[in-house]
Length: 251
Image (cartoon, rainbow, N blue to C red; front, side, top):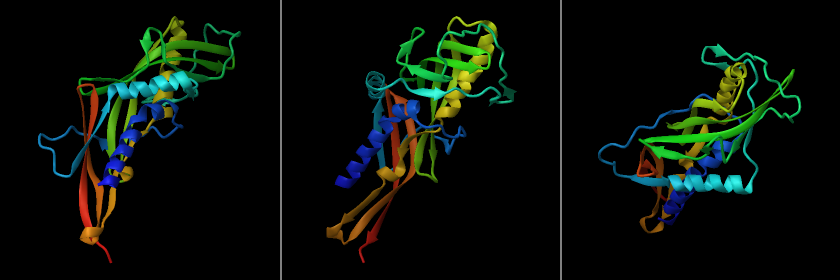
């Protein structure tokens, strides 16, 4: 049982640092892997382990990142980025030639009246994000600040035995920006956050799989992840991981 419990603990830690991966992960494809995770059934199947990740744990991780590390930064998406059937095209206005310009979005611990964090509410995972950034155009620098409202969809890919998160930025709110500039930067920020971060690896089923010798029984116990369900309840994310168990005789 020691290895099994140790594996569950590893899964807990991996799940807990999703917040870290959310903001500092390397760019990945934006296509959502696997299928959306359904809520648990009324009766939990035998062979199911429950992993509980509380809201305060996620936010403590975020607090540590902002306190001890650099603000997470992403390269701003280029003009011409497609969002649905719309292609972003630049509209130049209110150019500021005096500010340094690196063409990045930086996530801030707080700003624009918003504190960056994770919120569990109504069976959803919400993530308000305060940010600052700049767009380095051929005509000069466009600095901007604001905040975005995002949600996180949980998905399970059985082939990879992995739980993923897929962030979706619903709204972007810029501070005191020329309306012409706002119409260009808003979708650019939204595209950057949606495409630079996704998908987010939350829990790897291989890390919580069971492979444990049982010497007294003359065999080895194996278990692989068969299904994952999830619910947000009482300020906690509850993951229900169901296993397929097999006993392998020793040769």
